[in-house]
Length: 214
Length: 92
Image 1: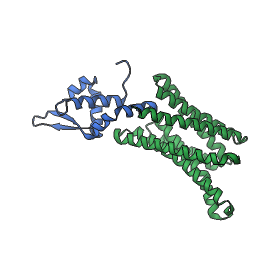
Image 2 (image 1 turned 60 degrees about the vertical axis):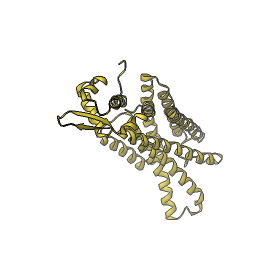
Image 3 (image 1 turned 180 degrees about the vertical axis):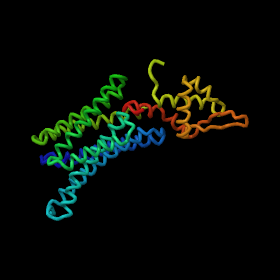
């Protein structure tokens, strides 16, 4: 979340990364929906929904960062306060929802109530906390730890190149998320976290290329 | 079979069998050729029918035969990509 990135030299890169991650996530989502159209497998649909939320989270983040810069002089008016709150909470909600749905798909949970309960607990924690960013990064790290752990386990069961790329990509997302936790006190960790995120999304892109390669 | 086949692979195998003998294949033949139990055959036939990958035809004597639909052929054509996508994210 670039609301943390108060490092001036990194701001432009931060915006560019938001756009790049959004494009990759939304492309993967579109691809999953196309697979769903052909196979009618529910898991492909949920996978598509999860990356749609993740992609939208980056786009909303990008949009509100631009808004913040463009209308910084209007910070006292009610509308600016409303937009600023939306810009703070909406990307976090979308990101948690996206990765939560991905976890639901990865662990093949059949009961949708479980997803709703987990999602509600996370969001209530986010809204009631005096430090929402800490709660957000903590929840995200926990979800990513379970997803990455599952992908690593499944790689050792099947030992396929595609599984390996996915496992490494999610491990990098996890490393990134852990660095974001530390970034609350030391901003340089935010830059490191974004760098790990970049590697992760590039690996996801490589994965799509390998899948499409005949 | 050395490894357990996943859902997508079984569906592809059944569709390929039906496509090879389109319109002239009986359920028992699919069962033997796809190496499935009777229970599994029922489950997967229902799945293929509900997803409109195959259609069922019943003649005057009550004999059932199956034909692959356009949707089914699309699945077969894109199977390699679908399989790789499902494998990479362990979807099934």
